[in-house]
Image (tube, rainbow, N blue to C red; front, side, top):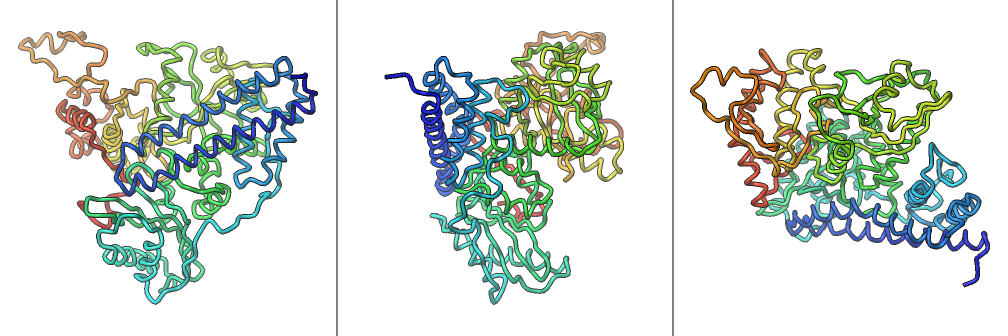
Length: 577
């Protein structure tokens, strides 16, 4: 084949990228649409396999298209003029797509892989979208409208019936009655009108784990109220397990500590903007991530950070809390994201490697997070103005992270960093919160450990400083360097001894293997004392028993799957189901 001109090569390259993106989209959608059938047939293992397959899809397609582009471009691979032309052609090719913004991010993923771009390059990246407004108009709204009915029960019945699951409800009439009663009680508490004038429900259901969720909003007078119905598929049929009617509850449902939803939607832009209306405090990027578009969610998070930096007078500073042995964590006072960098060397007694730590973060990314593991987004080669960093932080970066940070006269480049939502470290929270709030956090701390155990995760280091409290009061875990699968642990009882000297010795009187764990010793290093320890042990003393942990392991080995409820027990409509 004759050598292509640069302009022709740009056209062919853009077509190759478009074809790769269409492949990604089609496979993503094919996996996502299976969620409904998985729920209807109670195929929880299949649902878990689909979630894992979908998470690995993006990287696999980018690997393939990178190889194709290297082969196509040959010695002109690093010609940015060709890539700039390719970007222009590609922009035209995706202008008619309903997911143009995700397609732009895909282009960025390829160019950043090939060029290892430091900071951003407007010439070969969609730093901001090419489109001022959505380039396409939706063929239909992402939501379905229900106008006023004779009664709230009839309205709820109509909503539930329209989702047309292939399995019947266990008792549709009773569910509709219970949901209507909760809605009417909420209207009364808000002093709204007595009736629901209109409801807007997102057409596709949201599937995650063993649950399905119908999401929308209802209107009564001047009030707009979030509405989410949580469905379970029990042996007796489908039932509405909970109705969520406030922003905080729906926000927890979409929490950054949960795994990603499977929701069959062609225009993610419309869906995200609808969700943004009912959860205005959620970042756009977090909402994209929550529905499985994690790469574009990263794009939106980065744009959000750039917007913040453009108007702030603040500087990055070391995050509040005990200094980590493995990670250096910093943030800005008014920005609720932390950046985490792996240190060059780990303080004793930590003996893991950088590669092992990154593998732990990748495990969390791929695993069911049970609503308790904070999502971490990985970024490479971020470039910031040096003026944005406090002197204390610059010194710490130079001292502890020189392998992954380049500090110049005017800029600071982070070769690799994790973004996580900032939470209040639990050790600080229980020290500074009011007594009732501290007690509630300690109880939820124990529940967080149990929820992780149900999803085959053992946190390893269970000190309070490694957990945090969200703005909703939920306890989450964010320090992953000692995290492992529960099935890999060997939970043992302490061997008995008749010698008092052995019990007081600084070294154990018995052999310990690497994966041996002694739950009887947990009280000695959890960091709880006094009334807070009493509260914890009233609710979670079973965590001190090797039998508890072995029972969890046996359940996992037997294939038993626990549903982690993304709402409080008191919000359930059917207790004991």
